[in-house]
Length: 285
View 1 (cartoon, rainbow, N blue to C red):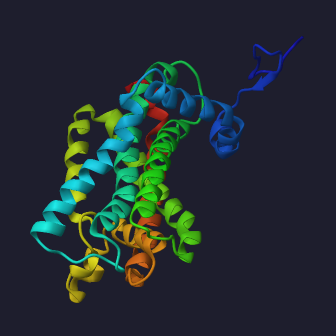
View 2: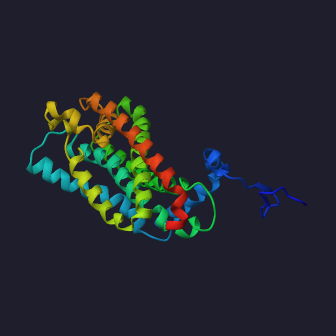
View 3: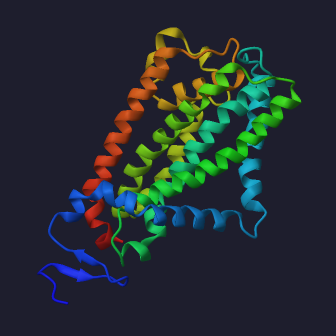
């Protein structure tokens, strides 16, 4: 069979049209076309973490629980900081730990995802956006495991989920986007500047202390609330606690709106930076 210039036949006998700019024009369509690759990458990472290992599952449970215990002792018992909505302090801390752990894990996993798949990226074409997004999905599975612990703690403390629990998926989606935006930006930088990977653990650790994980954001003076809410995790954690604990733990709504706006900016900036640098990934890796 004679093919026009710029054509080729793949292994399945289909005609592939090769023309300048075609991949750019059909980028988002290609993401859907490569959805099976997305599922394969996510499933592979899950299998590596959980299959034939105890620490993989245990780590998703131990890390938030131990952090909850430390924060409860330091902030609740020693510093005597107040809880929210009449909930036990440990329950308040754990409800704040879940979105933060999801964010930090997703950010760390996504930032190393392209380097970890360098052999695949250097050999075949596919939308590179699939790789860090699959890494965020793996972190989401850890979140679901930890969420089961939250439900068990609520049962232990005889704390019934409020009606706001129905709104929880909205804040989970917001946490997903808040993780994906910076994750795309950092993973793009990590490909070009390999020493950038040493900065990521510091950023994650620093973010833990400036986010209302071990304490309520209500202790921040009112005149500093909006400035403090420039950290998008503030509104997300407050909203997550409100959905989980209800009662008097209603968030400071301007901080939630600001978190949505800041998250949108991060998603736009991370996506645009990733797309600009994507063409050079194969050469740099």
